[in-house]
Length: 106
Image (cartoon, rainbow, N blue to C red; front, side, top):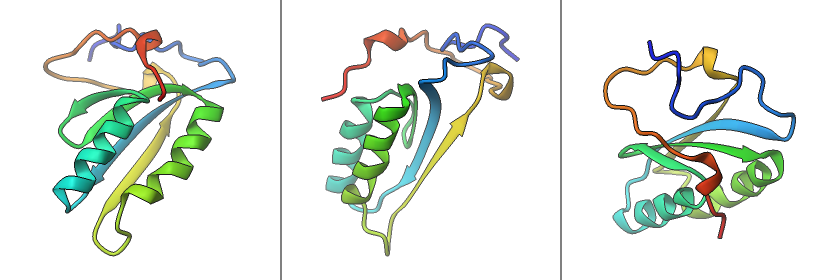
């Protein structure tokens, strides 16, 4: 277990910020590419179909409103998890160091 988790998340995030994990399975290549570009505006790709982000609650509300526009509800699946603090995240293998402040929402 890497105690110094690469997002350097405080055990208690500020009340305005949340840590989210978004995983997805989107059938259409075109839709999947558009969706991953959307998520790059909020966070960082950690695997082919998984992103992490530390965002404000306002940006979370915006993201939740945008997601349905990118998927086909009969074929695709998207899950968004809100995680509190680094104590709930365990990593193995390659860890990237990301600077959370570099994320730009378009």
